[in-house]
Length: 124
Image (cartoon, rainbow, N blue to C red; front, side, top):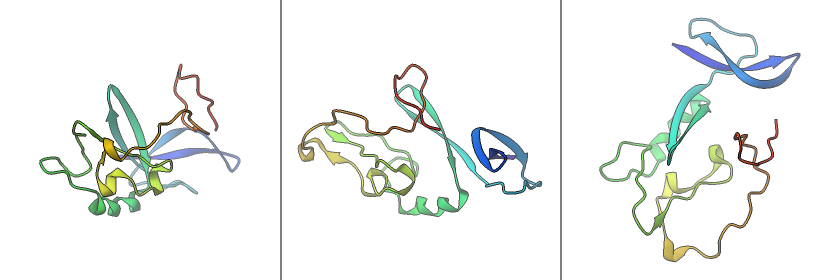
């Protein structure tokens, strides 16, 4: 097993990650756990601080689904906070009925995700 650590260059974090075996340490390394989530046809890599895993017990448990797995029913929406790691959203309180929605999103403000061909500004 390996853990993924952010690359560092002269104290500055740089893009990309490198692998360090679990039985080894790296100075100033931050231990991260990699998970994957699939939204539609796109699978995303998520790097998490393992200590945050204790929050899984607080997740909304949809009947008939494994923990941290949801199937959004028709007429309902899954709401994700703008700060995924620190947001109380549908992962914690469940789905939002369409009748409860007011207005619509018209722009993505300050997206920090980099996606090829998305046309979004990438910040690193």
